[in-house]
Image (cartoon, rainbow over all chains, first blue to last red; front, side):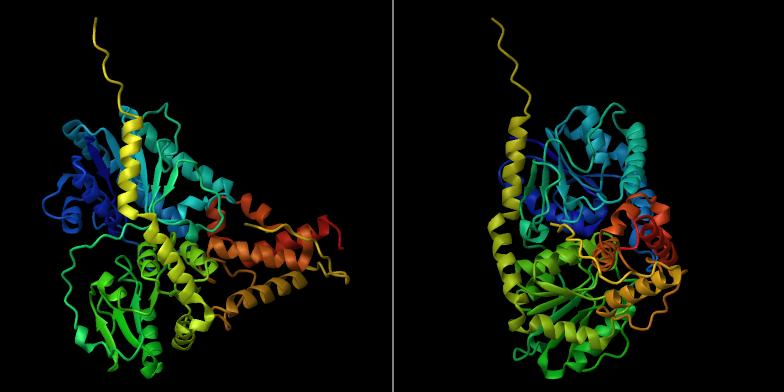
Length: 396
Length: 111
């Protein structure tokens, strides 16, 4: 029996993969607790899980839609992840003192988990929920890498062990990455103890009702979704997507997710919903148009679906390129693409002659074989056993 | 992952005049972006890669390949990017890139 503390940022895409892992660890008899945004964790992982609430930045991660590229990267670390770590530190400290975990499983971007575990001498494992950090995106920009290193160094001086040296994004005890080799291509891994376990796709409580009988079974279904974090930025893109789907007429059945209610006039034949039961819908869909968020991409590929990718920022351009390189999708420009180009892109990935569907299906098969949350739980048990304190020798 | 440059040089001498280099780069950017729905963007020396053209770091990798294809090994965009601070990358303009390319061509001979 091992006690696991899971440390997560207030971001759905970072919590969701660990929901399945937490369930699997509990099923195997291990006590599990969470540290993070209690309301969100309860909503995603269930009411009955143990959560140590941490103070969170007011309003969560809010950025103007036009903040993209390297400016978004600077904002993400300087204005969000580092302040988040400072804010979460006392809550994590309290969680460790109360729960006494044997192992901390810390999200790669909730770095307070790693820094405090390191200071307290508790083995900690990194949870990586995107494939983008694994290819060392700053390798060609040493001055940017140094900038981030300084930021993390300052953080460590405040909340961690000032003598520590490990990069808190890549634990020396091991990194569990919820992605697959098929997406990474032949890029070298940052660290030999990186375990690619594939996406953790566990059934989740989804209360969205959906008018299944309105889907035309005679037309291939195309799902358009910009994920959970882009409701403010997606208006123009969604409008172009609706015109593209409308223009394709009987060739497709479009389903557009519009959580921000930005669409006004919707032509008949295109289904628009504020929320959808995404996994159920993917099981019936034929292609996905999305922002290249790692979770939506992996869930789509898991179901063998080809993708049209319109990355907005952060890891999304890298994830999009990985999908394109793997042959399972095409990329368009989020802020530039119009209905005509989007329609062409949808036709391209739906055309079986293009091979996108076959590539997506092959990736999906390998994802399923990787084992996801079950494999992750196995790695965690093994790492815990390797680093368990030696039993106190009996006195003679 | 990456391929070594074969270093095929064009047989005709390239014009390293700043204006000619800027025209070359403008054409490359149009070609790079045209596939992705940007035929009509105005590109000048003051155009920024990120705010104006909405290029991502990953696009700079593609551009590095295009530059090498055109100019050969004399122009190494990766070296240029590696020397930039985060703020300088955020504010990077087409003019700055053109100046680097022109200076590289002058320093490394005209082929």
